[in-house]
Length: 354
Image (cartoon, rainbow, N blue to C red; front, side, top):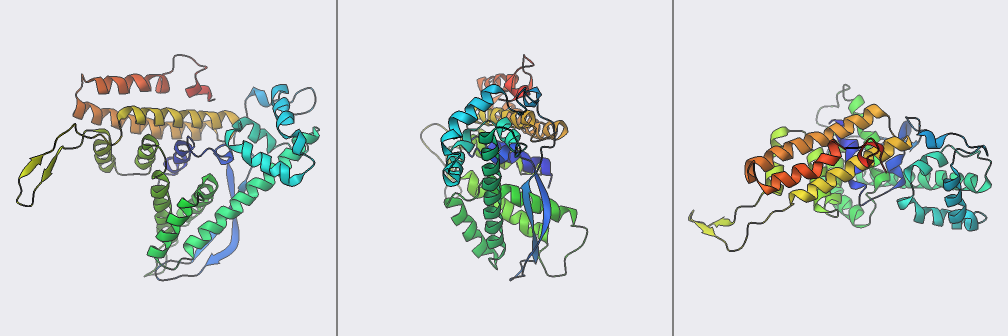
């Protein structure tokens, strides 16, 4: 599995599942927890994840101000206005923080993670509360993954995944934990599993695929399709998926005797191409926003953008083949992606982020 594709999926989902984790890089430290083998599930060691310092330096907005803080005056005012009343009550502060996290600027979140000793008391309190909140979410995600791997057999695991999705527990924190476990497993793949056992990579990939499938049921169709395409490694399968979802479906059914029956009405399109354009644009903006905030380095961001660009190129070919080179559908698709991949200003959100 190419992890640049795996990582960029989180940015696609961020359009509907915005979380502090979209702007936080995670480092992995090994935990002593191991899971016993049950009916084909190999013994698996869970990698714990925890927030780390950003991999890339933040923009000029994060330089120290005259008051010794890394925050601009506007950012300090936002933090004071939002959290000042809750600072003296730890529980109220955490509750307010949880309410604000989904819409908080990623750059502010990154700066808060570096501000445990900030001279501003409000900032310092919010920074400490943020650390506690994120750690609690990661611990919960780790426990969810453990429960899935403890299921004992595949059907029970799949049922638990469905329940976790319905309960809203397959969030960005969960995928951060799962991603780090997948990376660890891939690095250790050279050490072959015992004969007859499912390898750690195989089990975690199954969990990853099933969780993605469940999440895709609850996001807009354009985002779900982009997500599906990014986690599909084989070119021919992606081409079939693009044709199936973006192009008109056959308006006929085949009877048992082999005769075809023409149905009334217009052929159905499962995902109109403009919805995929919107999903691609949102994914690129999310990637650039996190890069600007220091949550990833330029090389990683470029790899993620290239993964999305490749999907866009393949979609353009499929639309041209099925709608026609001169079709309005292809023209709209190309025009919609023009500002995404060829912005006319260096200040574009597709370069600078939001």
